[in-house]
Image (cartoon, rainbow, N blue to C red; front, side, top):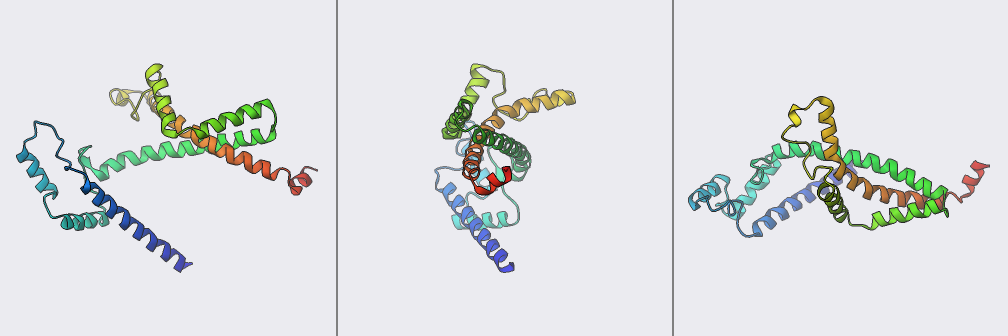
Length: 225
């Protein structure tokens, strides 16, 4: 068991090393640097000062060594797009991502299991065929396309839901507790609906197939008898 865990940990270290190395060199193969597109008001002298400050003027191998040392010590660098340290950006984004993903997974498994059982129990009926066709249609749709269609429908054509963000950044801090919760839920509906619909269709397809395979078994007939 210890050997198995040690081998797995070694594989994880190797994978992390390869991913960080590939990411580093892919980024450096792209033209320019983070300060090349700051706008015409930024002088070349200021850009040069920033490159020196962040080490972009150093040789590539030296940058790579500093990068590995920083990642190994937990220093993930600075986000030039958000203008905050990467650690702060992750601390802000990870809890929101976990909230969205955990909620979507819970809803997907609950709805998908119920839908799969419904389709298996009513196999051959009109309701089951309609449900099966709908789940197959949603399962076949690319998730990014479904997200775009929901966004266009409910945030642009019928603007009843916000198009982005986690809360209303203008008035959320001044809302009462109930209104703040409702505001957060309104912002969760569109991304949560997209993730839940796709995953529900997937779970329902597998649940239906598994039930149709098991229900004719001898031990199921014996249990029913």
